[in-house]
Length: 134
Image 1 (cartoon, helix red, strand yellow):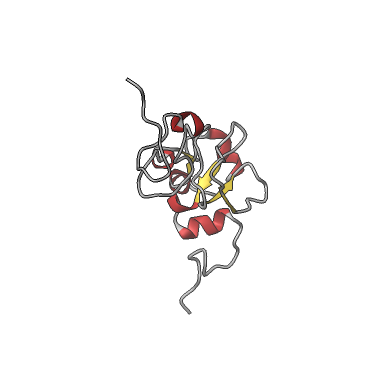
Image 2: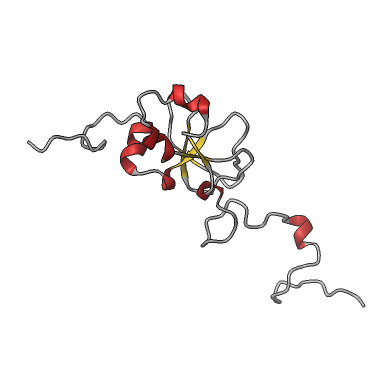
């Protein structure tokens, strides 16, 4: 029995498609397909090295900061910061990026905006939720 090879007009993939694209949807933000490691990530509270680095943050704050597990792929187009970066610059991930052993990536989508602003060095009290009502 011979396998049918794909043609540009049919809806069947070529028999070699998996070899050519083993992670076809990797890094794409299409619906809920794929894994979402940020949903089950450890928090800054659980990573003892971050307690000193995030001095001034309460335990409750640290519990709200998920850190992507090593080896997890970042979502293409999503915003992150690396807590290993002293300047904590926000960056937009590309589809081929993954969390390495020297990264503490925090996904913007999983952190409240006031806490995110604080993590990224925003000093405006209104953006940190500290503005007075006077």
